[in-house]
Each structure stands twice: as structure tokens, then as C-alpha cells.
Length: 388
Image (cartoon, rainbow, N blue to C red; front, side, top):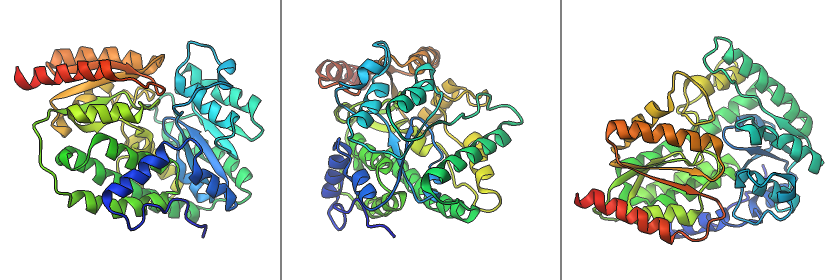
């Protein structure tokens, strides 16, 4: 058993727990990853949106969610065109600058730019870089078997880096750990929907996001400790509208942007880091673990602009999210230069117009530092809804 990498929250009151999570999230030196490696552990970095972290976990490795960072991409900029989204450049910058040391990197062809990220990463770093090809045709009768085979290929690559074999029992134990995590995150999001005055948008975000930097067992322990503290919090409901945030599936808005939204409204649901919550229920541990994991990805999962599944039209799924959260309005946003996000923004707003659901449109970039104009516009939007 390795020493724990994130303990400063233990035994602390709620505000201190949230403070420590926020500090960890904003620490661009990634101390938990460094401590894991100092203890002899290996790290698999995986790019947005979804990655079957159970496979890396079963090998005794730390899955690290590569999600960009609010820093200047001084070295990485020369490796990309200027017209690409920020998350690609800042993610590579983390590796080139040595802020994060990995033993393996995995990306996905979620867009034209990300499709080439593995090759660019591999030319500049010495460790193995892989592309995980999730099914392009999720509606094919062969898609589950195809994904099982792709997971099996990935497992072999992970085994080579970890220096050990991954057994089915290893995978079953990992499924149990991640099933617990999924249940705890469902409980967190139920709180956001049912009693949003107990937890602000940025507080919920940091509790979710730190899971990408620490062993999942530690994330489970922290959430199991924190959720009862939130549920017993003494807070009064305010006269705020309820909004859904749509557009955080890949590049993440700055934490201050999320905090700004929470000042104006209750953010009762969102797609922040949706890959960490992609699978909606427990994955069965009986039977063939990789087949169960493949089936869950396709048959029991959320939605995003980078998965094309005719059974899950994005506009219909968004309407379902709005209805489930009893939201009054939607913030429809996209990262600058994000082709999938900007395309869906058009489809979403057209549907919201048809349904008569109010929405606020914006763009963001992870390096944004000033939100004054957006806050004024959002406050005006909210006031119009409250008083008209």
C-alpha cells in the first residue's frame, strides 16, 4: 500500500476541506502526482474526454486527467498552429516544462486537433504515447465487441509500461473502486440539483476535479467524509434562478468563471469533466470486466459533442438534463477555437429557441483572467428572468 498523496483535508471542517481541494486544483506543480512518483508509482496521463481509468488503476498506476492548465504555453506554442484551442497547447506545455512527469500518455481522436496530439506528444517526449480509438459508429451491432478488443489492446500497452500483468480479478477490484466513486459523484450532483443552496458551483467543481489528480480510493475517502458535512450545512435558500451549464466537456473554464456564475444563479447541473462521470451507474463486476466496461461506455452513459450516437441526440439529451434539474435557463458556452463545441452551440440554441427555454451564450478560454463584462451580461440576463 502506497502512502497517501493528499491528506491535508483529513479531519478538517468543511471550509478547510474545500480550501485544500481548491489549493490542490490550482497548484500547477501537481504535488500529488509528484508524491506518487516519488513513492515508486507510475502515471498514465489521458486526454479529454473519456478514458477507462480502471485499466490503469488495475495495473497499479495513477490515472492523471490531462485537462490543460491556466498557464502560458511558451514551449508548446511552436508545436501547434495558432488557430487551435488552448487546451492542446497547455496540456503539452505541462509535459515539456516538466510540471507533470508521465510514464505513458493516451489521447483520443475526438477532433482533428486531438487526433494529431499523440504524434506531436510522441515526437517531443520519450515515453509511450497511444491513441485510444473509441467507436466512431456507436450504433453498430459490433461496437461493443470492437471496444472490448480496443480495451484489450490498451491493456497490453499499459501492462508493458507497468511491468506487470493485469488479471480479470485486478480489473474487478478496480471496477468496485470506481463504482463507489460513481455513486459518490451521483450523490454530489443530486445535492446540486435538489439543494443547490448547500453547495456552490465552484465548491462542487473542486470536489469533482481533484479526482483527476489523486488515487480514486483517496477521492472516495474524501467524498465520503465531505458529503455528510455538506448535507448538514446550515444555509438558507436564496431567490436565484436555476441554470444548467453546457460546454465544459473538454477544455475547462477557469475556476473564477465558475465562481462568477454561482454568484448570479444556482448551477444545478453541468457537463464539467463529464468523462469522470461518463458511466451513469455501476459497471457489473461479474463476467468479463473489459466487456462490461465496453458495454457501459456505449449503453449506460452520458453524452457529449465528441460521441456520435443516434440514440442520444445532443439536443434531446440537453432537454432531459434541463428537465431533470428543474432548471429555468441554460448557459450555452464553448471554448474558443473548439470546433465540436461551437457546432453544438448552434444546434443547442436552435432547440432552446423552439422550446422557449431562455439561454445565455458565451465563450471562454482557460487562461481568461477578467470576467467583468461576462458577469455584467449574465447578471442582466438573470435579472430579466427574475423580474419579467
